[in-house]
Length: 231
Image 1 (cartoon, rainbow, N blue to C red):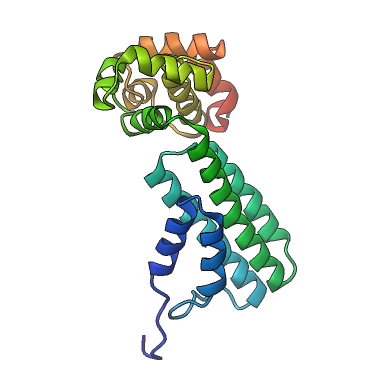
Image 2: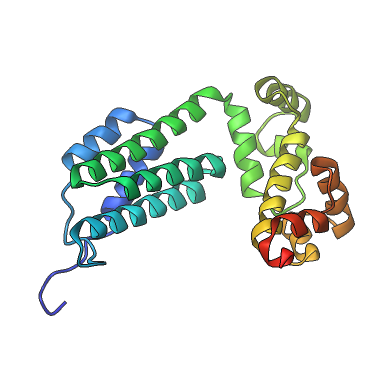
């Protein structure tokens, strides 16, 4: 502040996210070409110039990925995969121009995925998935969902199954079980807390559904997958 040099504002990042989630690849390309210069200065994280650029780009990838997942209700595993691959390529880059290429490739890959996702689904299927993501921590009643989407549960179920090759109930349970697996693997929350977080009426109901989905009890799964519990 004393030297009169300020960090760039978050507006550039937010505008880039908007371009990516539009699913319009040409818009992202134009943005990267025209807006490549930031207002203000990027952060100074280390004295090594290339390492500093890598750190800044990793921070940007992480920030964009988090914002896209939080605001657009899309498959977090796919976004994580794109992010992970990009960060690996950032670490392996040896020149500044390579880093710029990786950054552009990350933005375009994420944009293409979002475009494919938006064009693939029937509008009701996309709305149903968004409803599930928004009400994930509640007991989801399909009749209530259908009413909110302005259709019948029968028609919604038929359209969803034709698109996804599974029932809407199966999709809901699959999503809950996958998140349950992550919580058991990476957190120390007890089973009761995880059951409540996932919108189950009881720990026993969660355990029954989890064993049906994985073939293991939550406790057995955690013992195998969670390093702290193995220790």
